[in-house]
Length: 124
Image (tube, rainbow, N blue to C red; front, side, top):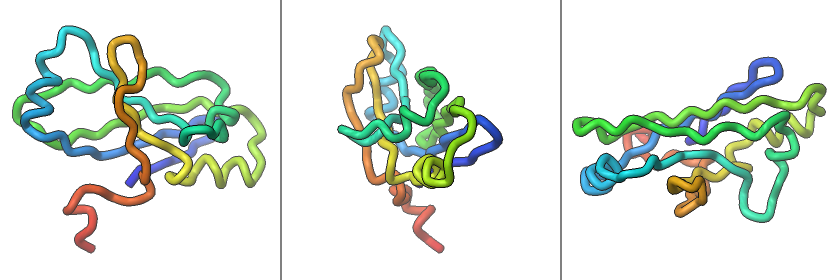
């Protein structure tokens, strides 16, 4: 599940992901970087309109022994957000997680970030 924390005029998006051994091996040996940004849901610019600046794309260092990674992205927010703005900002349902190529073009998107996809997170 996407975790969203707001502190003043910034917010942090954090998502734990699991990457299969085969996919991780391929990603470790690409010539160009792979990026992992968060974005609005398709056809929606709710979150984009709350940002003071475009966030940088996130990269992770792939490790041959790790399958689980934590992706974190910092957002710089506009000042004086309304209560409705903050509610939208803090709702994981308003975001999608993307995998982007070296040109920072999305090659895959994952939606439903309000639900955990990792088995151990569902054992409560």
